[in-house]
Image: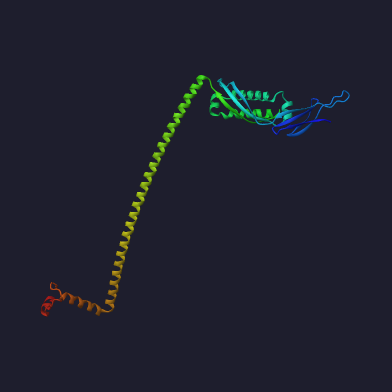
Length: 287
């Protein structure tokens, strides 16, 4: 039987039909397909191979005018990245999987925006992308398509609203600049305050250290003086004990002192004697 050879690239898959009936999905590689023979009394099946692209592709939904929950008309452009993961379902479940995906994304965007206000869109633009991805992903899987991501590419606001938004954005940028300047000024003041506080702390520590050293020096001086006085008292106490035990030592000390005084020209020595009272006078005093 004569055959023809086909090669399927790795970027595609082949759907094999025999007389219009799907008999299998051909993977990438070399395949031999029998040629049809029709002899009138003998006829072989007619084999067809339909290629399906399984690479990642982009689908752009442009300029859809949609009303938000607070009745503001917006024009939204959405980009969807997808790939065919089930060639059989992609060609048999729907007439055209790209058109079906386009419609599903469009309807999902309308439903999501209808539940959002303009403020919601401005403050959380990612919510729209997340809503679209969540809603379309499961539906697309039913016809053999896997959604990789769905992002809002562009949002166009009405003219007057665009002007107002530009003014708001300009005011926000100015506020941010002023906020940065205020923060910078506050930071400089904070650093200066820290420097002053650190200087005062160092000065206080220096003064405290000087006072502590002076107090320690004074205490040491008092201690030395006290020790000297105690030593002197102990020496005097010891001398007194020695004089009490040995009176002759005290007499020798007196003599030594007299000798030293005798060598001084201006020295005066006063010696006290008991006053002598005559016996007769004493007797008369007693009478």
